[in-house]
Structure formats: C-alpha cells, structure tokens
Length: 228
Ligand SMILES: O=C(CO)[C@H](O)[C@H](O)COP(=O)(O)O
Image 1 (cartoon, helix red, strand yellow):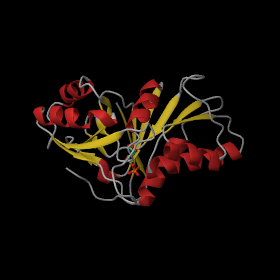
Image 2: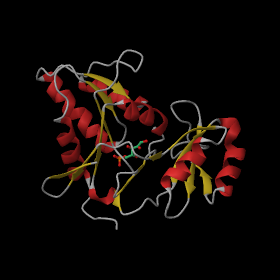
Image 3: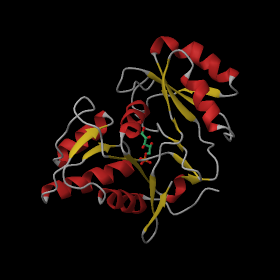
Image 4: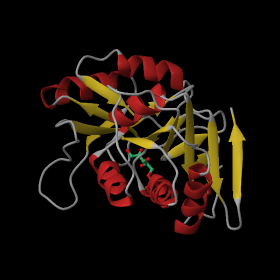
C-alpha cells in the first residue's frame, strides 16, 4: 500500500543519510532527480570539508549539480563506482524499482548496476507492495511504432512522453524517445524486464530488478534503512 509522508524534507533526509556512506577514495555514482540531488549537494558539502571522492553522473542534470557542488568527476571508462546513490519512482517490498521519471534510466541503470553497492533514496510515497506505475521505456526514434506494438502484445498501454515546455516529445540525454507503458500491477517484474530487454529498438527500460542493496527512506523525523 502507498504510504503518506512525502515531501522535500523527507527526500532531503534520505539524501543526506546516503551521503554519509562514501569514504575517502571512493567513486560515487550520482543519480538523477530531486532526492538524489539532495545527496549530491550534501556530498559537495563534504568534499568542501575535505572528503576525497569522485563522482560519475547519470545525466546532464546530475553532472551540472555535481559541478556546482564541487565534486570532481570521472567516468565508467576510468573507474568502477564503489557506491551509487539514486532515486526511484516506485519501490516494491522486495526492492524492485521503477525508475525513469526523469528519462535518465538508461545511464542510471548502467551506473547503478556497475556499482559495488547500490543505494536508493526515497520518500515514503514511493513505497508500494507491488510495482504498478507505468514503466518508462527509452526507444530509438525509429523504433517507436514497433516497440509500442511489442508493448501492447505484452499487455501494456504505451504513451509517447510529451515535453512540458516545448511542443513535441521528450528527447533523452541520449537523443532517444520515451514510451511510458502502463501494465497495471506487475505480477512478474523479472519476466516483463526480460521481454522489454529483448525487444529490438529498446535502449533501456525502467524496471530495476535484483539490483538494490540498500534503501534509505526519509520519514517525518528520521530515516528508515532496509538492506536486501
Ligand atoms: O529515475 C529517476 C530519473 O530518471 C529519478 O530517480 C526518479 O524519477 C525519482 O525522482 P525524484 O527523486 O525527483 O522523485
């Protein structure tokens, strides 16, 4: 069941709690979204105070934030992340996630799955018994129609994500489009993840299964930590 108690304070508590994790010498995957942004800003404060870390951003947004926060950057070509800190749109009881509300899930999955330890930061509104939010699917621009057909065949209802401040679709940092695919309650996230991954033209989908090591949920007065 969905929880109440969200809001920016809860997100900040979660982000600051996760920013406690990296130690000197660590490489940190920097997630995307408003909750991960709190972690990035807090990490920046710690870098200012002498912490020696390097960040690997998961999006244009997290790169900009990290630069502003003064976090030195590196890439997956140079280093393996010791820890990745990232947000989520929905977190199931077993730690399965839906991500991609910011259309950054392709690079997020790349960085988060490469990390030795993947830490999710969230507020209580993201928690759910079973996943039921639409699944964002990043597609090559030419693949929009065939992927939409494949999603329908898999029982989903795809909608091309529209941009809010321009006419036309959202274009990802990778130059692709996003289909938000409603499947209702997802009974078999592993099976659906396999089906989407095997569909030609799909760059990446927002189902993150068996990836999370730790969940930090900010509450009204603290942070609940779950380890998987
Ligand atoms: O997956 C994401 C971006 O692609 C974000 O992590 C997700 O949308 C959560 O965002 P927020 O912390 O702002 O609620």
